[in-house]
Image (cartoon, rainbow, N blue to C red):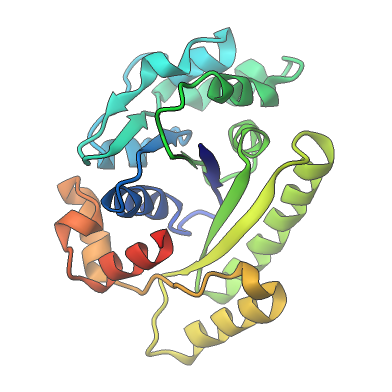
Length: 244
């Protein structure tokens, strides 16, 4: 299984949009995908049709619960889901004094049956314990970045965090790619941001980009990924390119 943490410490960077729509696009390519929603806001869970009202993932992190027991079928064929739980709001405080707390998720993922080709970890918009746990557990990191100037500053902080994780808890972690999202090709600013990303990070920046698209913004309200909500839209086309 390829385990990929989808993360960016800046909010509004299309992490959940990428997790849900990339999962759906991979499923179209006949891959089995598991989405693990680590964000207490549970946006990916709601989008994929299932929110856990119990302890759920908190029990896995706090009491070594079985992650496989939490897997549910999503509303997308070929995509399964471990939904977020409202209890995750208190995870940082509850686990702050636990030694090795950041490695618990890695152990839980290692016990999953080899049922999936991809495990996508949708991280919260911060670099607290939940995001650090995801980076410690994953083999790869995918970073969605808004094509806005302020987004570049947050990216620098995230790459430093990835380097620290590699040094301290997960030497096998690799940065798989940086995905420019919400790209408005009509503006010079968006193009300049993408050029700046390519200049700094080279081949780590995906050739595929995700264009600004009204249909992408509408899709969560209908609890459908863009590939089924608007299969001929630019958003669907872009996420299929990312999956490829």
